[in-house]
Image (cartoon, rainbow, N blue to C red):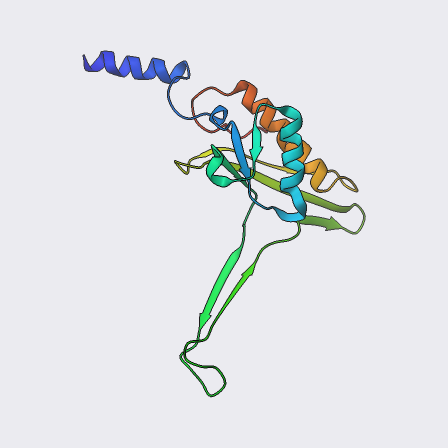
Length: 167
């Protein structure tokens, strides 16, 4: 009986009936991203049609994010002659530009990463990083490249977990 169970589990994994798939992400909430990358990704998802971008995170199957979202800091004072004891300050900062590499001869090359995380389980369903060409593109080109790879992986996805790196 034990051997039969092991064989069945192996067969289910082999035919793709076990584990999560990027295909579970039918609706996606796009967190704000540097240089409005989220807006360009949303346009590309709309053109594709297999995934729908939604404006409320609680309505999404998955959440899309790119890199470090924001840093929040809160400072409280114990009281001084200038600040009362109950004073506090909150600050939030986020990266506003995509990471860039530049050289004196070839110009600037930008890059972006996109990660789809299942909203309920927190499991990473898909992730990819791309770079634009020298002297070209920016956020729009990067969004097209990211969604093109997502389409490719979505079409070939079986329920065996996140897609392995492609290089």
